[in-house]
Amino acid sequence: MNSKSTSSLSSNGSGSSKEGTPVRYNDVSTLVSRDIKLDYGNVLLVPGKMTSVTSRKLVNLICRMDFERTDDSYYEGIPIMAANMDGVGSFDMADALISHRIFTCLAKMHSEENLVKFFSGDSQRRNYCAVTVGLRHQDREKFRHVHERSGPIKFACLDVANGHTQRFVSFLKDFRSEFPDVVIIAGNVVTPEQTEILAKAGADLVKVGIGGGSVCETRIKTGVGYPQFSAVLECGQAAREAGARIVADGGCTCPGDVAKALAAGSSFVMLGGMFAGHEEGGGRIITRRFNTGEINGDGKPILKESRFVEFYGMSSQIANDKHFDGLQPWKTSEGREVLLPFKPSINETVQDLLGGLRSTCTYLGAENLVDLPQQARFVQCHDTHNRVFEDSPISDHSISSMLI
Ligand code: 5GP
Image (cartoon, rainbow, N blue to C red; front, side, top):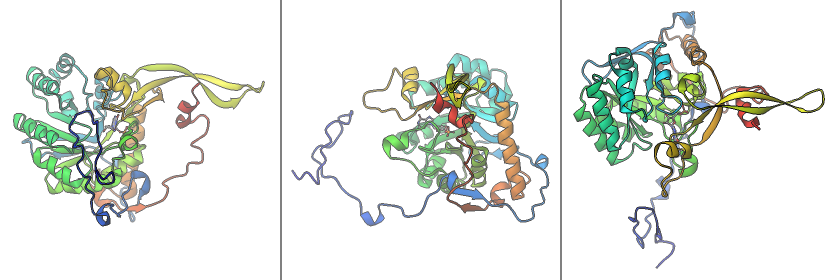
């Protein structure tokens, strides 16, 4: 046996390796895409010429979106979604965000009873919340029961880590034929080809993003991913050509990134980390002492006590322990766990975010978010902003690294 040209995979956990089969290599001249692909941190929006929008107050962030695949279904609100993650996609968060006309994809693990109670007799919650559905049989059953018991659910989020599989596409097609009137958000993918496939299989909104999330370790553990800004540009175009839209999911670190995603052609932006750490998320609150980095009069380090919130990726060890009886022996954790400074209310964060978006619109001369993509021009850059005070001892960024 030639060791250079044969596979010696002996245990992949499923027993389906083809032992002894020669490895086949692709043509190296076409193996690596030489186009430079970009993240939000590699581009800036360019201000418009002599724009006529004079005040942020005049900018309208409410959009109306009609969905081609579902008759009479539309969304009217701000095109931002809270992610279906523990600590973000909670009922309290959804209610708090509805008051700002922002959408929530509820976390997958809410029980049927709680979902029925949440949706029954409440049209606002139906207009601003999606029920998240995974590939498991019991998830689909739960959706069907909630749909029947609480009155029709308007939005479903079919969510898997890897939307590039035949199994997911068939699942989506089945779901579409069973629920023709439900607006379907489906993903995640990062290529235009798979975006088109999901759109044709029945997705109204294709969720785009693999590996770029704040508590995601997929790129580290698997080497797989795609720079998010380029994924948004390329998948957005593919979705439009197929009569669908995209949700840019993951990788936004600040309001400016959200503006870039919308300007690049995403119909919605999904946020996990930016909405995490707030009371409404319902995450575990922990009081910890941290070293401020300052020294008192006696030359001793100044310690302070502060509240933090646990936040973790949905493929992390802790999420697997909570929801799936631990990590199965063939899996690795693809998410991390962090402690975030506790914030008592989401309202300030929302104001910061929406104020930023209004300001983007005035810089670009867009009276609303619908006009933003048309007004957008980007410039590629090496760095987007000045970081000189980011490591100041009292900045939010540095506190969790100083925990003792
Ligand atoms: P963020 O807004 O925090 O940057 O990204 C949120 C997105 O990260 C989620 O909507 C989801 O797509 C993704 N995500 C959440 N948990 C995990 C995880 O454990 N692993 C990976 N690979 N992605 C995750």
